Image (cartoon, rainbow, N blue to C red; front, side, top):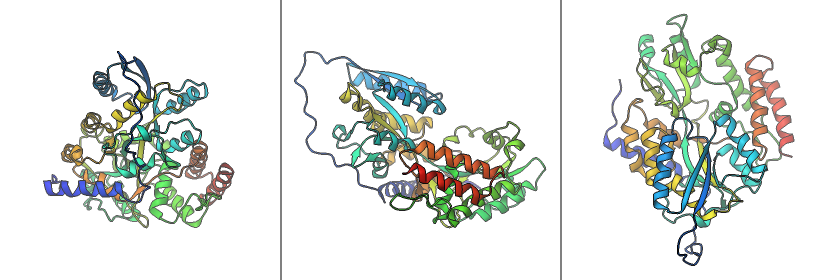
Length: 429
């Protein structure tokens, strides 16, 4: 069954983490030896209020954020942090309205998908000169938030998606647990065996939508959204069509419930009920599933032709129009790069800090469930980020809607991606 990781294995995993983040990215912006010139000393520091807007803290980590605000304000007399939060579904609509109305918060969160749009529109301040020389960000994470050679945001957290599985159902079905070298054919076969345990059992749930599609495109290895010079979409290529056909095929095979068959039950509730064998979802669900009435674990996702795993990253940016740039940058760096913030994130499950400090992850690796937390860092050997264009939201909405039509049987995979290719060609003109 399950074994706890020994110290040598933990050390090896942490080494893999550092190597995975360090490779295959643009180097971080070089820090100059000269720091910004300090203003003449004042009798008293001018009191400033830095407005911070966040989606990741609400609703589960507001107390954690309040604690970090208290620490920061104690260390930086004269700087007050004013926090505003919004649910993710509303956040970017509200942020865009503030930016358009010349009322942008001083500091705000951005996910990777929206970062390029804000950077390209000159909404963000280049934070390069404010960075401390010893801030230990992973190069890959730091590079993800560069734009045209400038550090336009700081990496806050990273996360990924794995294959969750109900070990008790695998035992009942008499089949081996998922392994690192599983293919999607293996997963489908296991799902069929698990579903045979009862009429109310389901084999697997793997969402059919944009975010899963671009990841499975990475697992295919030959499906690209655009050509190299970004002048044409390649989304209706045979490799991309085959990828979407795999996704809709799993849904249509009967081992995965349709939306109608879920009857208002969420995918996570179905897993917690013990009636779902495998579930493709994010590591942010670890705490939500910790009290599940069955034994569960995680594994790398199955492959099509190769491994590929989501590399989700949130960043913290400073508004180009902030009247308190230095204070805002201090808060952004504390929130993303301090030991205090990193410790809080790891201890509370508030995603994982994007810092090259292996000691921060030791407690995380030994915490159960799941027993195989090593898979979180193993997934970093095969990271895939979403395709990004300036008109990002339009691209995501367009492709997602057409994938939905394919899932519903209203369009074939070829028809859906033919339409998607035509629409994406317009968006990149």
